[in-house]
Image 1 (tube, rainbow over the protein chains, first blue to last red):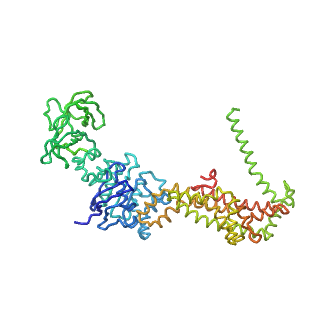
Image 2: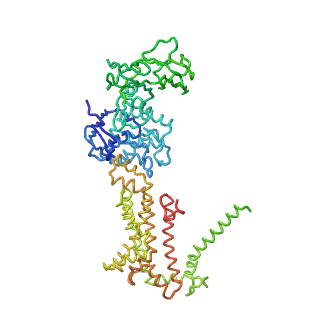
Image 3: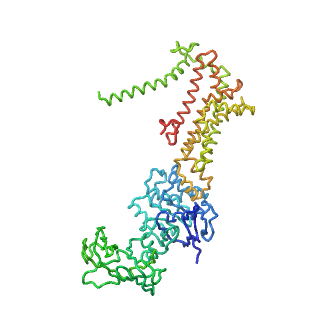
Length: 360
Length: 270
């Protein structure tokens, strides 16, 4: 077992009475790409700034390659940071910006020149060395910022919503490039975003932040398919939530009595028989059932209230008897029941495609 | 002719009248300085450089100009260093004490110079400083400080402090980050403050009157005392010299501010 690149132990940050971050534990192995995902104000950026050393935690310790770096100022940590606002030095050329960290490390001029050139090539901007940041587009500026943070080969790269200021197409393109850089260079990355798709595309693991703590941490697929809380199920992708009470619990399977009948699903931790629970189901797991189709593990009835055409698929809303709304997704061109607003339908999903979560 | 065009013409005429009103006295002073007559008549009966020659030949004028230039250079240097430091300190300092310190620094802008002059005189007199170089320099520095604090403060307001943070993460100590990132980026404001301080010092009269003696006086003080004596175009010649120095500083500031940064003359810069 090698030492993890980064380890957070019970890290917390308090501003007076306000708790910004509390009890964050995390280990990050070499070459891993981890995303902090959460709404604004959930503590993800504050945690990143504490790792960078721009803020001091009020509790806990931060270990970089096994060494506690909390007492170290940012300029002694040798961590790369890419900010959302690029933070390029406007009075320096692109080359001077990228050479800056090398100068700080007393790298000889000739070697620095070569490394700057290599870094520019790496981010796809050869020939831009003599431009000023103001002469670059947002995407190009972010590439320069990335080159500047990579050129000194830090053991850890922090990225704070680096694509937040870019438009959608450019963002998608940059996501792929960042993922490629991560793969090719084998760098260890801690990436902060509020964009769930971004987190899913690039990460080895995702830590979902809410109210200053990590709500759940895991591989993207595990997080998406087996969310542990209602917050995670709702923040990562769409979910329909149906409230009920736990009837039986066995072998990670739960049976829940709801207003729509008995529903079955995978049991999350923190449930107890007789306790309140929430049944969460993803729209794409919901199937429209024809008259001849056999009922699924979970089947409910209702009236289609809305159909929204999304290009690849149609999203539809089924209004259930007690007014609850269930989201469904039907691939366009798929054979099966025709969708029309106002139609009475039966929808169903299997127990394994469904999660029973503790309420609240 | 439409009403709109009529108005535009009226505006141009008014502008021209005001421009003439502002510039004419200066122009007349400059023209008289080239007179060959011993009287202050306009237009001058003939042209000559005799009054400039007379300036150069009079040790009192020469000394006074040198004194003024020396005070200007030292004042500008001290006021710029202190004012820049104060502005940087104030930029990140909040609270009632910070407000008090800022108000104190800016006070010379609103306190009439005659009051400042009398106060400075009383203090320096009790220390036996009146008539000394350092008294004049300190007096001028007090008056020039608020201009430097204001121009550097304005530059810092537009300065993105997150650049400092970026520099820190890249391995720069706070000192290096300040020298390599902050200082170059606020330098237009510092330069504007420097030139403003120089300009203020060079044509300052009131405080200088309090602190000068016949042995050590600025060129403005000497002019002031000569106005009451026998008056000849020599006074126009020295006025022209002062005008030239001020205009040079202003032009310098203008040229530099075109590159970016706050300007002494808001209409001209940028």
